[in-house]
Image (tube, rainbow, N blue to C red):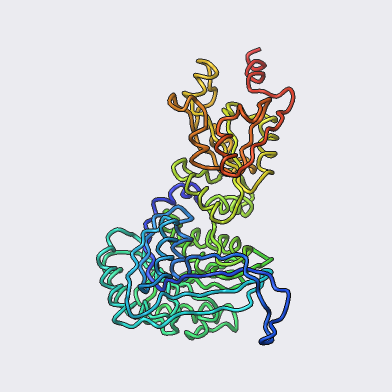
Length: 479
């Protein structure tokens, strides 16, 4: 497996087409039964809106740093407007088509103590006439993408999917489909379909034995003009089956919290890894790991490149390769983490020659929250601060060493003359929940402290480990 291709995630250009939805969550506590009917009373304390259906597939792709567009149908209503706003925040290029006669598909879930009590669905089935609108729009935007993912939830948006696949293949695109119809002939021409076991059986698949499963899968893809099938098999993992080969991948998460949206993550990860240049077997292997991560989370969750990199290190029993978030993407990753409710900790320094004091200090900083961002002085800044012989190690190498630490989530450089070699502007951009600095500083001496405190955050000063300093290391080497 060539893990260096993880650096190419942003090169993937993917369009998701399908049934988009607005997922609404109402959270609260239950302490009594209603006097009006034998149902629990939920005192709602929090509301949350998320992109659902095909929009969740696009969200998964965006969280993996790929370029993604979304084509679907919404109503001319408040739910459609909310969904458009969510997509904008997720950096998804929205190609949604509004129809005046039907509502945006919406699902409202009432949740108490991590249990779903009821789901309310607001939806009507879109017609072929509506689907024609998507087909027309698809023809206009097709050239902007290399991979087309069709996410079918049987809501009518893909009534003309046969024509859509034909159009995409005619333009030389790689097509992936999460199917819902048992009539696989509708997906003729697709490069990959990703049914689950239930959908596979409805389409005529046999599961009495591995031999029967493989034979029936090959028969289905052969008869219906499909290149390969990625069969998701719950606790049995998944299988990639083509005319010539079958690869099996064991499930990677034994303690399942919630399987909601796992199929979305699988097809999204598969598309991104193929778009990054991976071989199909390797792309499926990583998609399987991604599924293992999301099912350990609650609700329709996503996976970050950093999470995948850590999981890959455990899976391959190696730390020789790891994913270092490109500097240009760090701010967006931080914003995604904030949307997930994670606590962001920020610290900064030169970290020219990493030593035990640094390692302990960064571990203590990370312990203050969920994610640690390290602002790293650029080379010019260090030269101005430390003298002409510094830095010993250039910026990219210092960033690579820091990124390899389990305590560090992101590294982002700073330091220019107009910033007075301080991270103050960077801290204003990030607005961390907790700002940490090591040494003998008082809070009023720490760059960015005023901003953090003004926005409701905390500022903490940690002690350095006695006897550890980069200057002493350099002096000892010279001696």
